[in-house]
Image 1 (cartoon, rainbow, N blue to C red):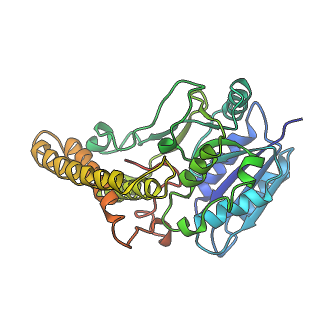
Image 2: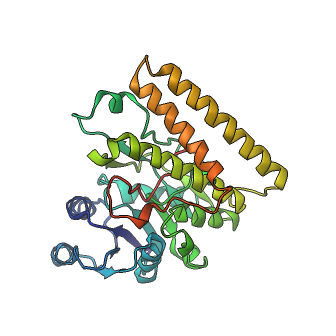
Image 3: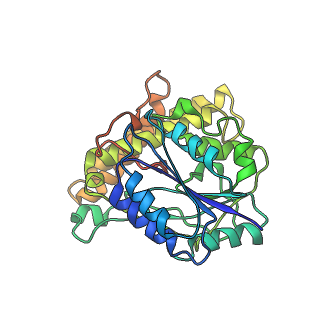
Length: 317
């Protein structure tokens, strides 16, 4: 019998984690176990997890990873998980009852070693008009069964063969534990080894947008971080073979696109703040690519400031 472990990394989101666990308990295809690793020095979620474990019919494993490092936390979940499949989901997401079943069914139908699904960010009804009209939380969509490009891989909503993940060094690179991008890196390595990773449009999850993530500073930092990680992984060869000439063109294009985006932001500001912010975010993303020419990298997980924290998944480009 095929077994599946739902694995969750969490950090100071007790209310959101409680909602996610309720969703998991209502799955039409229940998990064979749930693994939760809390990235904090104190076991803040211990009582919540214990209460959940006491009323569900499957094992729940819980541990604390005290060192602030998302890669170490992910690696801890992988070490604890025993399932043939690992279903990754973020602690601030909501999953529909068919979520796990649809992921497993897609893997079986398309003989895939990995399945990714949409993460739909939903601003609250009282969000500012410029947030609701902007495209700051755009989600990738594709046909179920379609191969996923390496540049579009993350584990915010993913089902992966456990043996494939465990065979990778790490499997998540701890050097990326404060900067992010560790999930895209690991998935790209899997794809390079020939693991087939496909899309499942039906297994969409929702991520409510918190107030701190509706601020211009957060949106621009998110875009910059995405650009940094995108360029960083290109330079590591995760998305394909690269040459010095390729990277020169890549960086020149990023510089040109940043300048064009800045100009469009200024020109469109009188038309609407949402237009200006959209293009400012594009400029920040391309500027982030250029920063990889320096030793500096934005460490999103080095702070507990919610305004500066970025989602575990996604790399806005």
